[in-house]
Image (tube, helix red, strand yellow):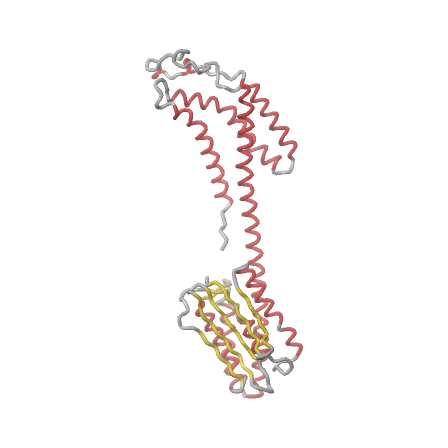
Length: 368
């Protein structure tokens, strides 16, 4: 199951990450002087804010204007040229950007702080923060870091949109495939009932009633695309019992369901019915004994195993050659649905045993 993040969450996360980066950059110098003998948190914080202001303006222009309007629009050269102009502007502006902490200290600290002179702070240049040549490096780092964050979240956004499109396409295809099943299934069942009309009218009436129940299930209980395992098993049992009405005792029909199947699990609606239909359509013979044997059991309460075996009948099945060719639709439909729902997380094994004249289909799917 794929996890989807909404666009609003991505945007908020991006702003949070950017805010944390700037908070660390601004507060770290102030926090570092708390244990210093002459350090003052308020003044260091104000100096850090004043020193970061040109770079913060550079960041705002790059983040909210240049990246969106030029870089993401494929205008890379314009993006580079404009950013170079911004960096140069910050460099020249830094020469005139001065801050004297002695004259800027708040009134309530004027008599509590030592004087800011070279004895107390021999390492500090009071004429301004250390921009100048270093400002070029800092400006480039700000732009580079911002572009890295912006591109990372841009990738996540595009990935999110791609997954949304894949999800929508999968839902559309699943809906289309499901709608193909219904007429295909009803057509085959009506053909079976038609064969019963001449053989046993009373059984044909009973078959019509059972068919109405099956139609109700298909039309109203499979809209979501998945069904309770118990309901799906009941549906298969009803269909198989409908098939039993048509064939004589010469045809051996078995449907074995393990008693220890987990409760409350779901599987894709009607996922096995096409394989069961094909078994009855192509595995029943008028000339010799034939069989359909279906088993359903669980592996470790996590996977469902479906095994359908039928007689390998080449030339004398109960349906004509035209119907044989049409029968491939159901199998192809099932494979397409398995691919859409499970990707590669399922097993499909179709085996034709010519020596023992058995056609075998085994499907293993995770329980939802």
